Length: 173
Image: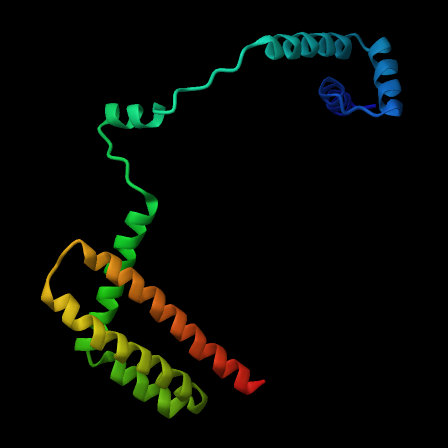
């Protein structure tokens, strides 16, 4: 029997997960092998001492105190993600609104892939509708609400684009 397997059996025995036939094999090996018997004794003593230790739980304000000492402001992860997502949405919206690139891409798609035309028309309709709604809001002011608005409209855009693509798939089937 290999010593790695014996170490595994010792650990299972200390955890109370040892089957009777494995216990017999372990006892038989421990009776013949001094090194494994010593290891078993040391592990038993360590397990006993660890179980005697009391549990230590930090106070509820532990994280806030550590962050304050480090000079780090605690921010929610969704705040950062919302700002990044809203900024990305504004960049894409400006690209689609003020660039000729989308028109060239759509022209290429319509001449190359007629089946994609239907999907691109639906996507263009969604983009046009959202840009008509968002352009006045974005031009009016730069306030703290803009990232939230961008996030909401990004979610709506993804939802409606997904619905448009989903209908296209249903039509093909």
